[in-house]
Amino acid sequence: MLIQRALLAGLAAVCGLAACSTATPAPEAQAVTVAFTLTANGKPARCGAPLGPLGAGGIPAVLHDARFYVQDVALIDTAGTAVPLTLAPNEWQTAAVALLDFEDGSGGCAGGTRATNAMVTGTVPAGRYAGLAFTVGVPPALNHSSTEKAPAPLDIAAMGWSWQAGRKLMKVEIDPVGGLAKLDTSKARTWYLHLGSTGCTGNPANGESVSCTRPNRLPVTVAAFDPATQAVALDLSSLFEGSALERDRGGAVGCMSGPTDPECGPVFRRLGLSLDDGRPVTPGSSPAFTVVAKP
Image 1 (spheres, rainbow, N blue to C red):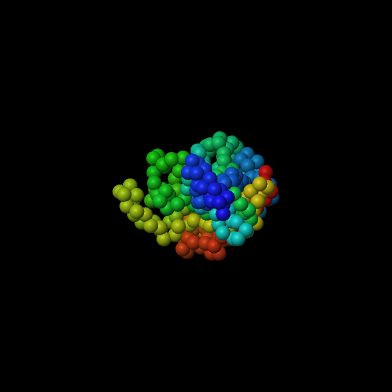
Image 2: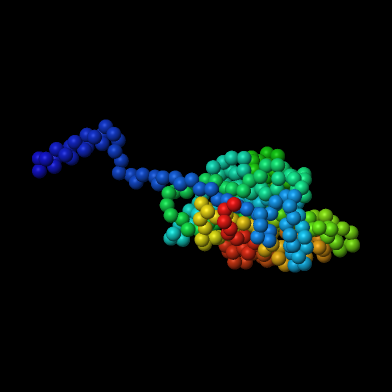
């Protein structure tokens, strides 16, 4: 008994000097890099290189631009819980959103920027993870703001969305070889896919909050994903599978998220979004995204 009391007294003295705590220590942070890539016909899609046949008519095409924002990036643990990735702010990402940029200003992408980015970096608590989740989009509180005043990567004018000072959440532009025929029989060079929120009301320039009836944010879930060996691919062959890229039947050339634009139906189906309300048809599922071996 005397020995036990002496040991307890000694422990108390040590804790008093060393500030012992019974609190559970914070889990160790685990660095994560989530790689993304752009593909067409099973190969990397790059500026200045043929993409091969695309669309319903198998039209040869080259890349003109390809960029998209992602938010709510998370790893899914073995219990099925999404654990948010704490983003490390840099020129390509803030704590809330990141930009993936696959154009390098060369070839058909002339007029773009040389710098590219194909990854999202951050940390999660150390542990075992089995999957990945992310959303193509920009959080509403950050989306409707001026590109001139926003921090990188929200400061890029080419990703600005003129409606309600928002952003192009996704911008994919391709040039079909020979151009495409418009409804008025004239020709256009580029087929545009600009995904952004529509049906918006409220003017952010006047300090008003903005509400959009069709948010067009796309959540994607990958049940099995290993960031060490795999990458997420936006597959242009799948994205344009049902699109007639050699012609445009009205509205904006290609699809600029207009709910009545005839070109938007096929591409929205491949994204997994409802053209009517701008919400996912099957949350987490998008045929346009797939998993490939890390480049």
